[in-house]
Image 1 (spheres, rainbow, N blue to C red):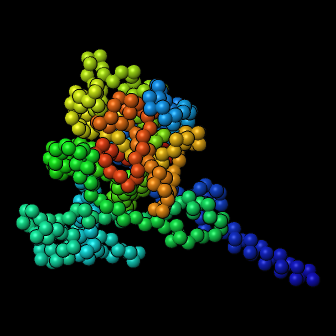
Image 2 (cartoon, rainbow, N blue to C red):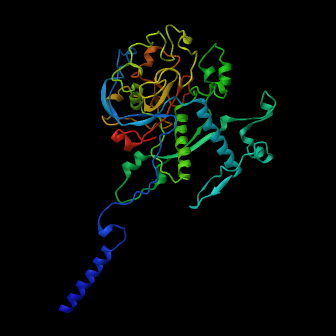
Image 3 (cartoon, helix red, strand yellow):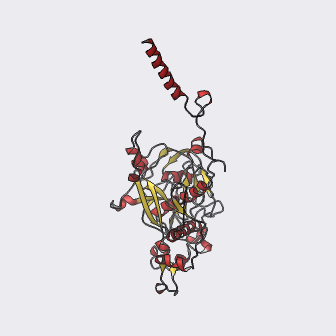
Length: 427
């Protein structure tokens, strides 16, 4: 009996030893944490400026001239982020359109390479021979035939370019996740096919009995407008650009085995207002105020002065995206020039429903939903607006599928670790 008991104790001791002598590499069996395998830190994106964390007194800083009663005062805590110093320019947006055109062509031609994990990617090292018979035949569906062109030769139809991307519905994933159980990710996959080319006809659609054909023909592609803000882009197209920008940067950093932190996206209206204020508490404009001219009488933004003297501020329509002085965060034209899309849906009482910490409201309107559910907040006022729209607290909206000659956008990206300590990342 004693011998059997001894054998059982010996067996238990062997089992305990087997569990206790496993791998892990800890010195003398101590808990010291795992080695972080992330190589390098994400640098500050080119063309972006740091907006620090802080407390914002959001809402009306002056009289609510529109009597909309949708800018009630609220104190919230904002988390820092990087934001584009200027609106996205024609030149930057053309880079996106050209990428969509080239990637579409490579895909049609079958210019792909195999990865070690069995997946495939476009082989960007292969050159597109646009004049070759093979390319012309393969891309025939993307050309306007010579018989339909007033110039007597076929032209590439940019309107047919679509940017395809996929995202996950993380809200639903979070709600339906169960600890210890894996979700079928395909159930939460959302796919988009968004037209890449901006609507250049907005310059003519918006103005009846007005000769705007020259600017409609030249504004997006002509080199003189490279540094001007892109317009004619609806809310869905602006989001697609943000996704492409993340995808484009991630592709480079993956090739260098470097970590990518954060994703480019449109700012929420609260983030936009926080950035526009430039650290000035309850000032009506990005430069402070209360006036829209400096002590020399020069206008500080591009808008509709007086009763319609559009050129008095230096620009008849839009101006360069880096015109005028930036605010204290280094952001240009947060008021005037073009209004800017935000991520937020327009709700008149949204200020009463947001959280105090990093506030934001989102909506996911379906195609069958009422049109008014698809209103998105625009901020900042534009070259065609009167001065009251330039106040950083002013809210306006446009329908998500609508493009205008006075609405553009800019992106932000959030590095959460430095934002929590309020120390901007090293450049």
